[in-house]
Image (tube, rainbow, N blue to C red):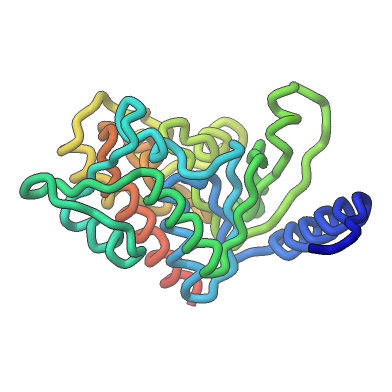
Length: 260
C-alpha cells in the first residue's frame, strides 16, 4: 500500500475524471432517461454496436423497481421469450413451472448495469432531466440538473446536452413524455395525441402490448419499458420483468436502424 495519500489529490482526481466523462457525453447518439431494466437493456444493445449512449438516473441506485422484486421479495419472474436475454447477460434463471422463470433481482440488476457500462454506455446517477431541448418540433436533447437541487427546490440553472434520439425509460411516471406534452405543443403518437395513463394491473394484457407500445412517441423521442404502456393507456404488469427487457432491446434495435 502507498505510504502517503493526498486528500486534495483524491478530490482532484474525482472532479477531473468525472468532468471529462460528463463533457464527453454532452453530445451523444442516444440519451436514455431512467436506468431501470428497460433503460439498462436498451443502453447495452446500443453501446454493444458502438453507439454513444448516456443514461441519466435521478436516484442514487440504478435498477428501478427490479431491486425489490415483488413486495420486497427480491425474486423476479420472466417469461420464456425474455429468458433468452437473461441467458445472453449470463444471469442465472430457474424454471418455476412451464412459462415462468425465476431470477434473483440483485444479480439481475447488478449484471445489467455492469454489462451496459462495460459495453461502453455512460451512466450518470443523481441527475434529473428537468426539461427537453426541442429544435424544429423535434426532441433533440435534455436539460439536466442535480437531483439534490430538485429535491431542495433550489433556484439553480441546469445544463443542456444534445442527442440524436432520447428514450423515456422512467417507468410509470413517463416523466420526459409529460414534459413534452406540457411544454412543447408537440402532438404525441397516441390515440388522443396526449398521454393516456396506465390501466390497472393485468400482467398478461400488459405483456402482450408492451412491444407494440415501445416505439417513437414523437420526433426524436422513444419510450421503453412501463413508460410505453403508461403513455398509450395500457395495463401495468407488476413484478414480471420480461416485457421490460424485451422492450429495451426492441427500442435499441429500432434506433440502430435509424442511426445507420
